[in-house]
Image (cartoon, rainbow, N blue to C red; front, side, top):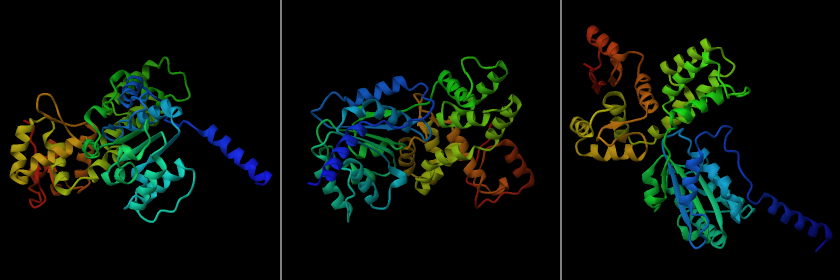
Length: 383
């Protein structure tokens, strides 16, 4: 071996050692994460090297699944031989080849040609079965994605850990993730929500004490966001370097017309639904929030027959609605707003929309007798 080749090999090995366990940027403002971080790490049981664990973090869009998963990843990555973070949904093609190639290039640090998913699976099993791997699969929305890059625990060496983030709880079940290894990420409490919106609003200032003039508008933002970190960050950025009156106007605008970034993130879950599931979701978002599940099923049974139970289960699994302890159908305020905005976009004329819920719209449509009965699916009267 020539001297320059030998030196090149040494440099390559040194770089491998240096980059082993490299951490990833998880965001500027982590608020309220510590107990959640500790819980997920405990589910991973990192100290046990006699098995392979898959842990799933699930919840609605914008709830902070990626941020939490990255913090977990950064906390434990130094304990593994190799590691990889994959943004699954945005890099997925029809057959998963791109994801397989990305994973292999990161783990074995070589570009390997793959001609089919089946070939890729064989190569992954061969390359990873003896390695202690930390794998973070972010924003998974299709079981085929997991089958292509993390089909079974025995693909990986003992001690490996796979973290999956998704909006769909059922996807985790289908992939064999046990209930005790699933973690539902929930909304921030009001204290942490206030801290998060405050930090985003006053990025370049000391935030220990907030001007009392701003407290009310920050509290309004907390109420509007209902604990959703994405909404708190977006609204906080709208407040940055603004006077109180400008902050009030920005929040008024968000309440009238949902912010596009928030809307697009939440609507990804809606777009993934089948047509009948979309219809049921819009019925609930526009007309039946807070109603008992039994009553909702009775009303919607006329249109969807016995399929209504299946559709509601799907909406729960995809984190779009919840059934509370009293048996009532609930959903996050911003998911409700997202559903209503989808219906508003159907037409500028309320009489041509599929659903009406605002009393002023219902009154005007009935008064003018201008309703397209072929398109109208539902009216709701609050008496």
